[in-house]
Length: 276
Image (cartoon, rainbow, N blue to C red; front, side, top):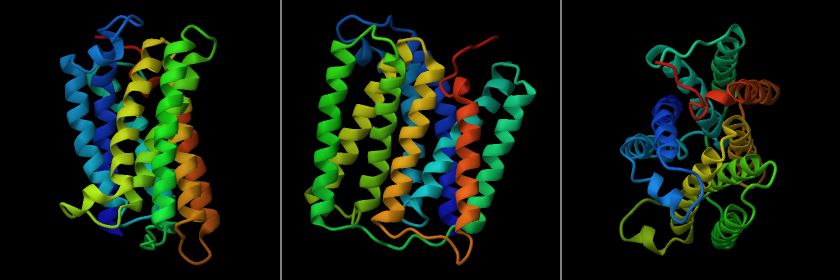
């Protein structure tokens, strides 16, 4: 339990720092035009962000084997608090009292969940569930392509893409949890292994498109909701994630508090503004 929580927090720190570099890479390429999203991924700041996110994902992957989905995903959403603190300390972005309060809310919420969370039950679903998750990943990728290419300029475009990116990242967590093992070459025969790759790539590209649209606050807030709520419900309903006896209300309060804090920090989620 303690190791799983520590790894979830490490994932939060790594991913929160990575968002600063990802935003710099995305903004270095003009929005629109053929291949804009792909070209953004080759900017050096974005590559640094990918490296940090990769390390964070490894921590997240292992933590998903040790603690419930709702705790891991709330910790990942808490990376927005890390981004805000990094922006304040290294980029000299001034945090108002409300933002410091939101950072505190994220920390308190995670602490409450850490107290209340039970052990991950080891439920890894069945073959039908794994195929459904893979099919969902493919469907979301196709829908994301349609929205990002055919509805550019539509009002709330950033929020829609951000929400879809969040759902994609949530599918990554669900698929990773459903992996029955991490052995090679056995992992290549698992449908959810391909769902992890497809949803991760789809999420990155959708997030780049959302950031390039300019409405970073809306995109990040939608991403937080999409990334946390779905996996939390999935883990509780279908995989048997539990809390300690009698502490379910405390876990629910902690989850709500951490997500509320993350939403309040949404404008720092992708480092919308930098001041030297």
